[in-house]
Length: 138
Picture 1 (cartoon, one colour):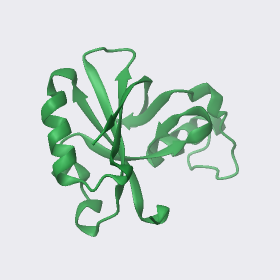
Picture 2: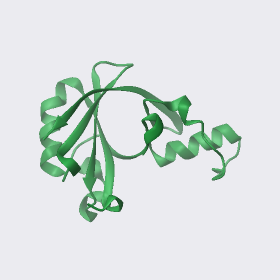
Picture 3: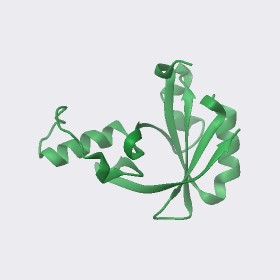
Picture 4: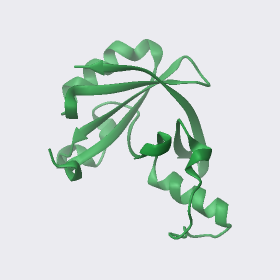
């Protein structure tokens, strides 16, 4: 399977939505290796995050949440188990450098973001501390 044709997705759900969310994810996405990683939000036990890799398909690329609400595309820094959006990455770089545009040469200290998901909301960095709850084999 060509890794270039894979996308990492995360679906943010309430814990009571677990069964329905799992069914929808399985129904609408071609999940690579048939594994979904369930992460707990360490700061709010009522919320969970499903993460999974899917095969790229043009019809789902634009709006992942069209199929499963509150689903976004993420990137991963494997060494620190950090998941992040590109918008958040750029915002972190701009805040750390004090510049109005991202400096591509700036090195982020990823250890500061270990075991977390980094997203933005209203141009602010949101950090969700996570822990693997279980791996779901489909």
